[in-house]
Image (cartoon, rainbow, N blue to C red; front, side, top):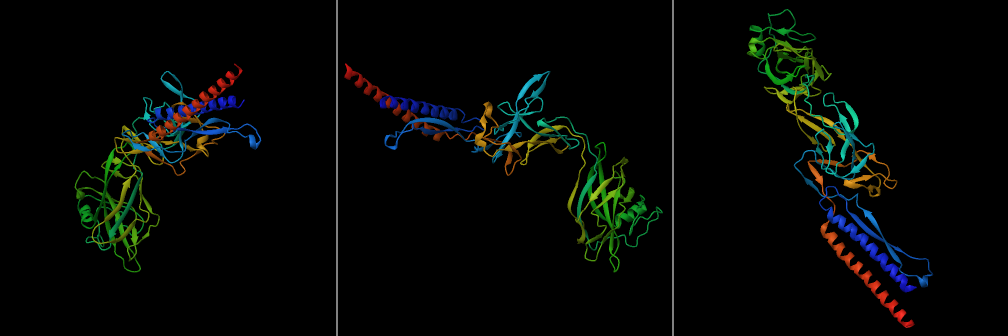
Length: 449
């Protein structure tokens, strides 16, 4: 019976080595497959119950060992919507269920993949080379509100213009400017033009405007936008209207031109309506709100929305002769047509438009598993959740997304060839065992003859 057992054991060895060769061949075949995870082979001995003095080596069984947690090399591509996960995790994807009247519907089940060679298809969906559709949270590019969860669809519609509603502003005014409005009087209006307290006023074009220009410092010029997205030029000047002399503080006023199409002296100028007070050291002490509002200004005949000027703690009066700007930006823009999209490190899909604006249009869904090697492999580089893998946990959790990159297969050709040689030798050795056992059985039969 020992000879027959040896035959059975050798057959199990041939099966196990054949199984190993099957994995090796699959790894080599997919060495250039994006996001592919090689399958290694482990061998388990199968021993019958025997007394220690009669124990035999036993037969063998081959099992697959997944390498889903082992990352492949990340390489750059020329496609902005390609992406690779640098760290653990998987993209959550769905597959197409049907296509009726040009409308794609998707299977409700989530699959998971490391294959990130996503491109935008004709409907705006991000689909990879295996046919899976990237999922996440869609975001309305106009309102910025989160929308549906599911396959990400990038809208290529143009975006309308947005009125400027906020200007971020940080500047250092000179402590002792060469020109001031201290002691200056204006005749063109009865309103309080120079503000040492609350109020506002408009400097008339002509003589009064010339006085303003000669007694002030040119401030920043900034392009802002109306509700229709039309660009409007905002020209400003800063004027010192009161010197610091205890117990009073130095006071500055901010003016903007009502007509930027003419010379500064030919335009009227509106006071922003706030007395900016600086102590003797040049620190802003009033107002301490960090923001003022231009109440619906009209510039070049265009009626604008109210504009908040946010200066926070970025307004001071320490400088020499000129204004030193450290921040100047606004949140409006004109209408724009879709150009392209790209992926950020944090998983945002960002669309860029012809007006130079960029808007987040989706948030990519990335999940992680306690035991990623417990996932069940599916076709096209996808995996399914199992009891062994645990439930998916949404979030990058330290992983970053490398846009315009893909992850290569983690197969090492040289290593696979080495394993192939060892497998071939082991398989051949098992065939020798069968040949030897056959010779021994033939000898046994010849005894009878």
